[in-house]
Length: 133
Image (cartoon, rainbow, N blue to C red; front, side):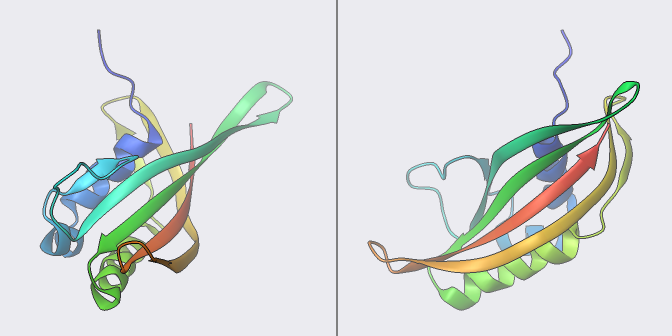
């Protein structure tokens, strides 16, 4: 059985294949949580919402909101990863990936830092909306 291609998987692959992003984080791109003991810097991708957009014929396209979090032990490190994420994803579009998902548009809506007081780390949250069919 073929796996479903999701916007999260498309973003994961796109970031992993981007030379500027991989130069900073290597293959340390995770879904929802950073594994215990995983090295920094890294990226964590979380799906926030999925909203079908309708026309008279039914669902015309879907908007999926993702939060892409850049994590590092220093604020400048997290900021550099967040900038690479934004440069990579804002304006990204794609033909069919594995014949399953057409990305019409990818846009970065916001990016903001959050100090993690318990660890002293800074995480940059990059909110991304993927419009797809």
